[in-house]
Image (cartoon, rainbow, N blue to C red; front, side, top):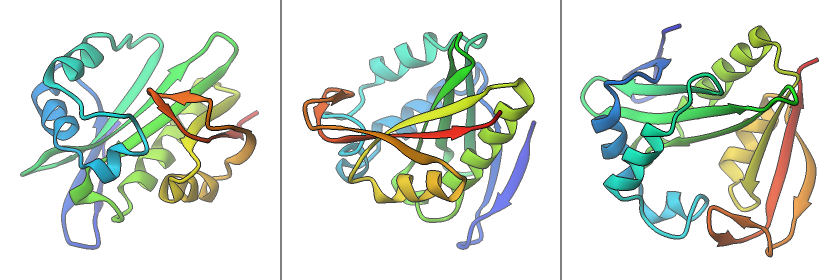
Amino acid sequence: MQKKMLTPKGRVIRIRPLNENDLDSLIKMYTTLSDSTLKYMRAEKFTEDEVREMFRKVDFERVYSIVAEERDFGIVGELRIIMHETGSGEIGFVVHDEFQYQGIGQSLVREAIEFARKEGIKKLIAFINENNACSIHIFRKYGFVVERRFGPEYHLMGKEEAVLKLALRLD
């Protein structure tokens, strides 16, 4: 699978599976995310070692990972589905600050839903900080509904904030 999209700013973005040559580009993307993006994900910035460990731990039997790549910048977004034995998959994505609000998140989610349907995944689940209006908008656009709200005592990536569980039934 490999697709291309053109952003409103005229940049060509290639959507493709993550591969073993992507580590340096992932490090660049994750370690340069701004505080305004990180506030929905985690309490502190990513370190190179953390990104290396995340990359090393990708179990391609259970994890579907696609990236959005721009020729000059490198990887500008990543989406992962962690597949569970229950037939569901947990989905999450991030787009680098410089490339947000250009349709990249939507393209990643659309591709992930297509993959999930082909693979027979029955349900996709996303846990999203309830203040992350952009991600919530994207997931709702593709049919995800709020299944549950967890209060601020819920710990998402080390942060104590209210979280929404969004779900999309595919069966």
